[in-house]
Length: 284
Image (cartoon, rainbow, N blue to C red; front, top):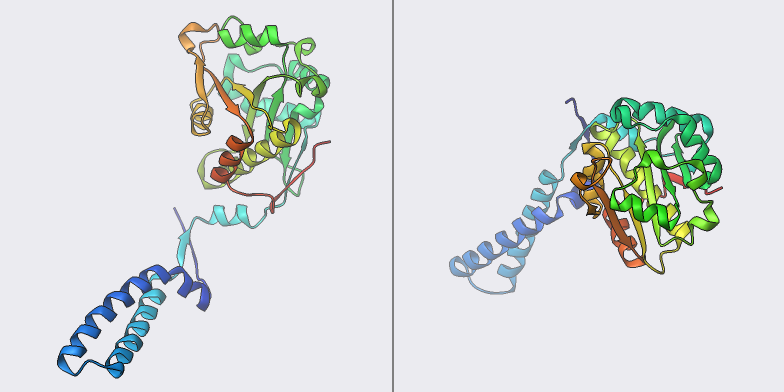
């Protein structure tokens, strides 16, 4: 992969190599102080000379170790244009996201018209992330379902295909549910460094969304049924655990769940990082 070399300024370079410089300076001081005391004479002048030489050598090591860093160019390009907006998804972008994941989901992909019926029941449950040009880079779906349906769904007797528009709850009712379903996640070109950056924006946006709508002062249970290997790795990395095994389910996919309260939310946010400087949240 072709890399770009980033050269820090004078102060930044010394700061980047500070740890190595401090280690080298400390070791040099111990050797010089002992050597000069034996060869010359112990005293303040010997101590001062050892300190000066150690500092100079330490600064030299810090300068050498703090040199430029090789970074993939697409990562820099992605970071240089951190002007995303997370907002309720439009019908057009929802259809575009559905068509984007169709090759991955195959027969299990839910028809765009059916998902649009879900969106009409709870527009705030469908969020898109767009760049400054208005192009879709990610989206996610968070919906509430009746308790009876959710219980049978989590047990494996029902699948996502059984979710109809009538079963999707509006946002007011969703906020009252103890269990929430994360139905869909899409990231544009998820592979590579740039895709990883967009995925981090997606996860950060989801965390902001969950905190805004559900408060999390009391724990909520969030569920997900990942279809692809990549999405399954994602939910595992976020701490989701399997509630019902694929072999016991009608859809033949593991059903994951994660209990989230405010303390758990803060830990997740620390892991993901703070992306508010590059992404504006609009909930309506």
